[in-house]
Length: 152
Picture 1 (cartoon, one colour):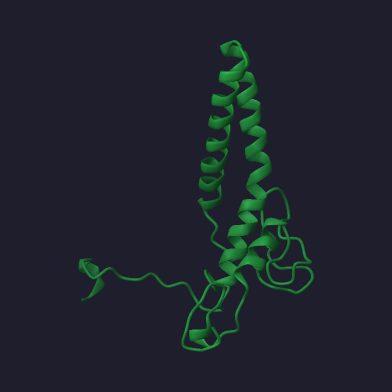
Picture 2 (cartoon, helix red, strand yellow):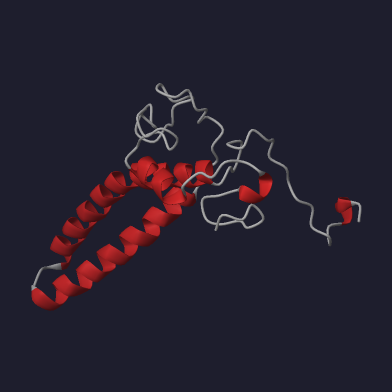
């Protein structure tokens, strides 16, 4: 897809902006590195992003990952833990207390381990698609035609 009138994943060719590879940006983010250069750290602490990349000076502070990483982690961990619980229940004969302790610990450790890489991947997605300030444009809110305040 080299035609400038065709939009594709990781691109923005129709706006004249250079392509940003979506997969690479998300993998860099998941590795907790700057989605632009892959060198600088993405996080200043556990899931607090840096304001700017220390290596390429890309601004990161305006990302809007919001709750998406947490929703994705709950979805993924929930499926894994419920499946593992059901499998364990069929194989071993643990007491309910043992199940509660084991699966609570597995759930908590899984969430702690998965949240930073998933948030990094979401920030990488936003960077690659020029979302939420990564395109040097202000965020605008689209009016809904049925909204009486929209002026239509």
